[in-house]
Image 1: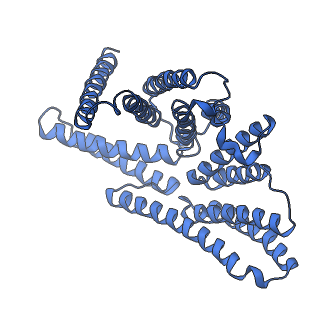
Image 2: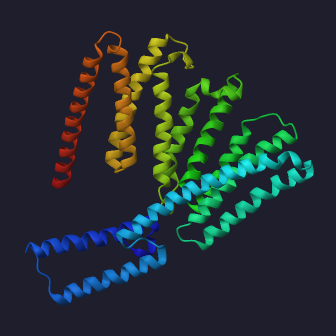
Image 3: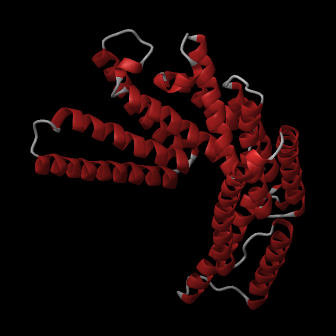
Length: 359
């Protein structure tokens, strides 16, 4: 792979490949399978060392196991720090809000998110990993969301689903600016909620009751799943996976709800019929997700499909057998089904390995 086309995730993968190669080469030499001249070993080692130095300088990747552990700790600390700062900002506003005049309140509400947004952009330009930029970005988003609500209270504005569109827009901008998946999560949830609210309002219901019609989430979840197919997310670590997995979770949750409570569906048919249709759809969609994930090598999609396939299966078992079957026998049957699923997955895994070896 051309080093000039790498992003940070690719660079870290290349570093891991180098370490894996060195470890495997040492094992092969120790077993006497391969023997390399000293000059060739030195050339390979020198090339790898130069490449590691270059990648570490350009992408700030982790070249040792210790640094990888520290990076994980820094990611966790930055996430908790961002959440704590956002909550702190929320309580700070409410602690002193009543002592301020209206003009001062409006001034604070207007300037605070702008200052936080500019700070997040500036930090993103000066950081390689962007830990502090992500903290500033999440605090900026939380401050903006809080300020929109407070401005609505000050000027007695009628609540509207358009606030979710505004929040999602800023979350998308900040997510891509500071390369933060947590902000992308809020952006996706907000835009799905906005679309569901607007569709619910167009159908005649009050927009705040959008949760009563779960089917409103189906179209936005499908559209968001297709975003990485049409818009390249290569420069942003984990964004494509976030789009696919989160949209699938939203879609599967909708199908799971409707497969158990058909009365909340738009379809004006018997509840049992609606639930049966969505139950079949749940099995088909989760199986399709597993197949597509395996085909495209999307591990997150495969795992999401597996989880919801099991959930759909167990909810059906509960409907069929819970009321009349002894509890010990019910859980014994569940255990047998889990073993059967394990055997099936093992068989599929074996066939996949055989196909790859033959190719």
